[in-house]
Length: 133
Image (cartoon, rainbow, N blue to C red; front, side, top):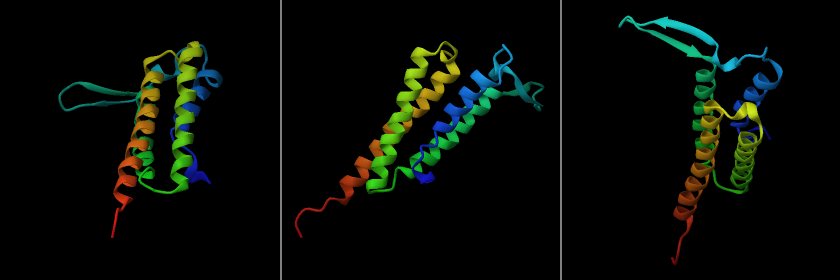
């Protein structure tokens, strides 16, 4: 059952939990998670927003691997992924706190998941069709 769950709902839940539940009035994603002094003398800072994008990209990879399956399970997975993208889109358009470049990037990751899932399924299905003997 959990394998049918679109994994890109996790960044959506994390974003909303931080936006609506855990914020103290400021932007929770602008906070620095850690910094690393580089050999060049520069400083690399990882913010919470950057970490959420990294998590979403890793989950996108898993979702694309899941889309290579064929059968009725993959159709349900594609439909649920489409619903997750629609949830991102509606929230982006209707919720003031979601009108950020972070949320827009997460929404694009969900769109890529939908497009890649259908594209991989169509290519896989085309290879499974046999005509004649």
